[in-house]
Length: 81
Image 1 (cartoon, one colour):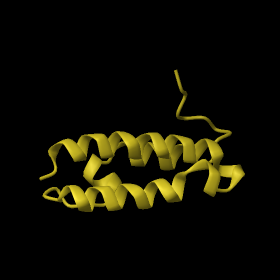
Image 2 (cartoon, helix red, strand yellow):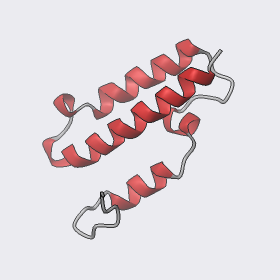
Image 3 (cartoon, one colour):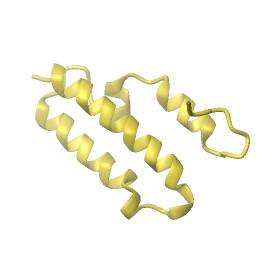
Image 4 (cartoon, helix red, strand yellow):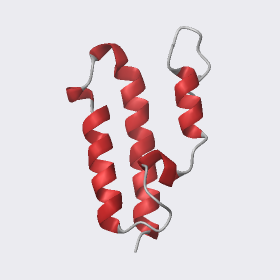
């Protein structure tokens, strides 16, 4: 089990606030988005948080954000028109 309120982790508060958002808010798309809009937003976020393109200091944060983005995209893409 991952402990989210770790005092050694400066990004734990930021992750907690992202987890409270809806999948559409995480991707930054409206609730009535198309599959193309969802995919574009997903690819932009994956490029931002991918471990190969990110700062090594933020590796753990980026890994968790990438998981959240993947879950959000899976949810939104099923509902998108």
